[in-house]
Amino acid sequence: MSNKRQRQTENVDFFFIMWYYFGMNSQLKKILMIATGGTIASKKSEDGLTPSLTSEELLSYVPEIREFCIPSSVQTMNIDSTNICADDWLVLEDVIEKNYDKYDGFVICHGTDTMAYTAATLSYLIQNSPKPIVITGSQKPIDMDITDAKTNLSDSFLYCCSKYANGVQIVFDGKVIKGTRAKKTRSKSYNAFSSINFPYTAIIQDRRVMQYDKTRKRGKPKFYRELDRKVGLFKLIPDANPLILDKYFELHDAVIIESFGTGGIPSGEKFGFYDIIDKWRKKGKILVMCTQVVNEGSDMTVYKVGKRLKEKYGFLESYDMTPEAVLAKLMWLLAARRRVSDVKKAFYKTVADDILYTE
Image (tube, rainbow, N blue to C red; front, side):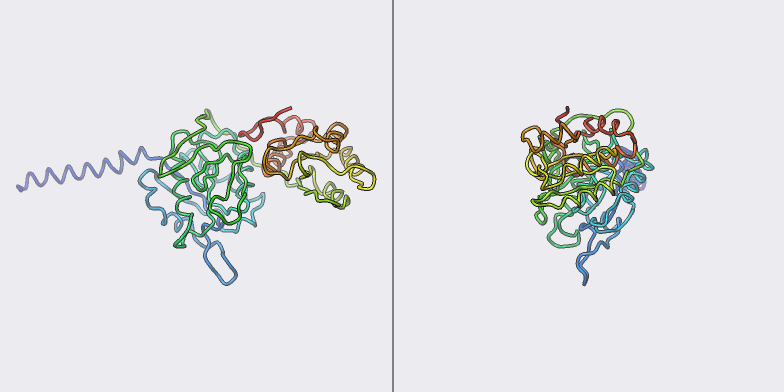
């Protein structure tokens, strides 16, 4: 080959490389991964699995994502999700808000135990987001030979880059679930999360996203930066001590009572619940009824033990909402609206597809 022809070939190669990096890559979406710890980032220790891997180490296990996006990462915390609290949710909101204009989407690596709580809370703290905010994790650490972590993490980036991706979603085991509808229903299996009383947003198979919900959000998201931590959940059991509920009301601005079936509380003087409920209702406490049954939701009007409570004491009820979403919604509402009447009115307003039934 002549020197002239060799120089021409080298120039073509050079321009191809420049096009690939500065032309093609300019079309790739920029995704920020936010690492918080969880099983996905854990390693074995004498005390059991402990979050140890950094955000950069997590990304090193999924090099294939660089074919379709430009990933970056930040480490906000490295904790077992059992230790998550309201302060941590506000940290996540802050990181996303500050970086919102710099990236096309966000992937949060999170422990599975409280993932549904985080997804629900972020759905209220960051509303109407045209960009996807995906939360994922795994049932096995990413450094194990047999693990679901690599697939879940890769799928999360893939979904972030898909055409209709928006809002807060959980991506897990090939399923995309709205943040207000997710619930962990299996403690060990890979298909750990279910969508409660609502269809999946999408499913992912063989690196293909099959989108069911093609709704697009327009405009700018609305960010909220406060949560009221004084929301409690009281799980009703047969022969429960009403004094425990009394203490719950004393400590909280709102109490969610997770009852049986379609919703109700034991009636009659021997149980002593009604007097306690009436006392705290008059003091401006908010009462919400939800059900321990996972699917189909509450309906307090079906039985006398529920209908009387709703009519006489002004109970709100969750209907088809998950307990995780009810808790998160009340924390958001109480921080934004101080009047009980305002909270009650806003509770039934649909946010991020959290409730279908409205009064």
